[in-house]
Length: 149
Image (tube, rainbow, N blue to C red):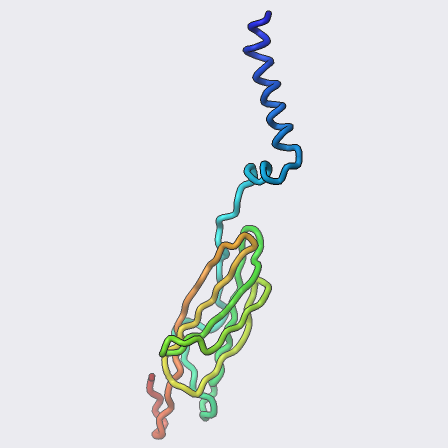
């Protein structure tokens, strides 16, 4: 009977004791058991489309401002979103952040060229997602024929 206690009941009692210790409310030990979030947010750009064309401020053309709008979803929760516009020289010329799962702003310039737009979202676990597109500010010629910068 003594060997039966050691081989069947004792391991069960030890397992219950270990669960009680881990579940005792000690944050360091319970954090080990929790599964961590490693999934980055998924970004959907509403506007503009990649390679969207707009024109310098003050021209007679209709599209002088580009609306920058994107949203993100996540398996946990999106914490914040940021959009940056980078000019042809590599300088950040516009940035906008929001503490939500959507960013919405607009951009215009009087300098023709190809601009990079970077949308970035971060979830509550710190996972980041980034999406890049290009927008083009066309130069308007005096003869009415638009040319890409």
